[in-house]
Length: 266
View 1 (cartoon, rainbow, N blue to C red):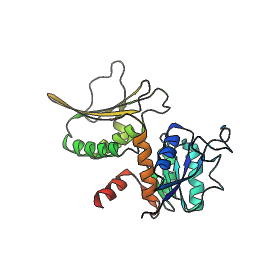
View 2 (cartoon, one colour):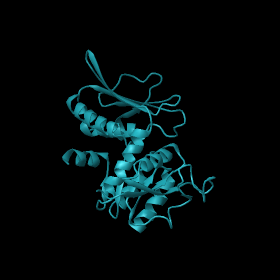
View 3 (cartoon, rainbow, N blue to C red):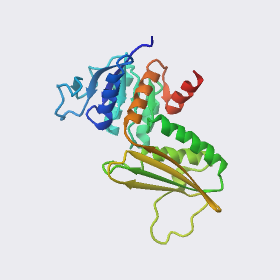
View 4 (cartoon, rainbow, N blue to C red):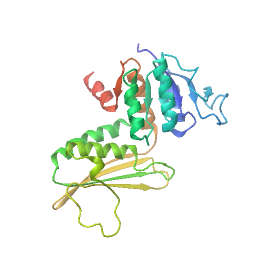
């Protein structure tokens, strides 16, 4: 029988945090939910949520080395949680997007001490999508490339973390610097498209959970690769798989690629 994974969920009252807690409780043979974390002014602080889980305003004093922290809060809070986890030697999972380069560096620095699992999209399907994109870009080096992403109208950052990941994958496969070749939308007399250019387009509509498409355009044809997520359960399920995956791993910087690779090789 596999050992249970004990999780603490930061961002517990948000859509993702609530769903992660719900799914973990439904998988009680595999997970124990120790606590939820929210910002200090939240109405649930010092109380229990709808699932009977106690809510605190910090992981300090709650987290122990046997736990795994799953963080779906905000970049600034994520980094605060990360530092506490480093001090306590606690594995850390985050799917937060919108990090700047300095914050990404802090995640990587922390991974020298604890296992850190970072994935802007925790869906197993979208991470298989990444592999298909990598393979396709390698074969279609002379094709124009455009990326589009569509999310709900409440999403705060653009482009999405997943779209940025797609751009990095394509840039690496084509040996281009994504910082130099990305073109964010077009307006006015932009001139002819350059060969190196990778287009990036963000749409915000209704309550769409997440859609990502990559277009490869050549002479006489266009190849479209797409992934659509219809609800957040795919992300929440992936986050729990990530927590279980790193619960017994050594210090390191882990991603969905590592999780999928291990699953394939079992």
